[in-house]
Image (cartoon, rainbow, N blue to C red; front, side, top):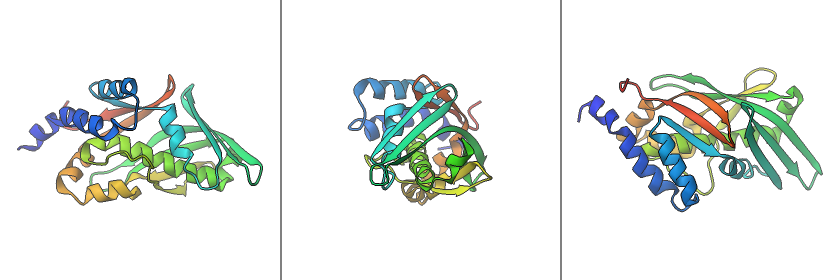
Length: 207
């Protein structure tokens, strides 16, 4: 199959794999919404899914994520220490290179929240869920327990995550067909609102 033909079949493959990978994890209405969005070259991740991701952060007993006004609002609380952290997170595409970095970035407000270790870890789990949803068609099937991406500081109040470091993505990249789809599917930008994080997609070669 020619590369262009393979890319043209992407949406149908994506729909089937999204259905299979998420049918036991999401309510039927949510699943239908994700599949419908994919046909319009975007994927939406609902607040409930984002909250489940950051709730995996070690030492965190309570967590919530709200998606509104162009940003994610994350609240984390640790019962043992009696302390919490609240932050406004803006998500953006950092660097996506052919056979290279697949990085997304996070801008944190207030700047002091960027010093919180558990918030940084939560962003790693958030990145893992983004990668698993974005590349589900390539065989990176979302799991009930999301994997985390490696997170590093990128300035005083920013972080970046290379999505290739998510375990399920790393495994998929070892398979030629999966690697081709991962390389072909590039996020254009993130749009936050209406209780979801939306990823606008780019399908190179499809116009």
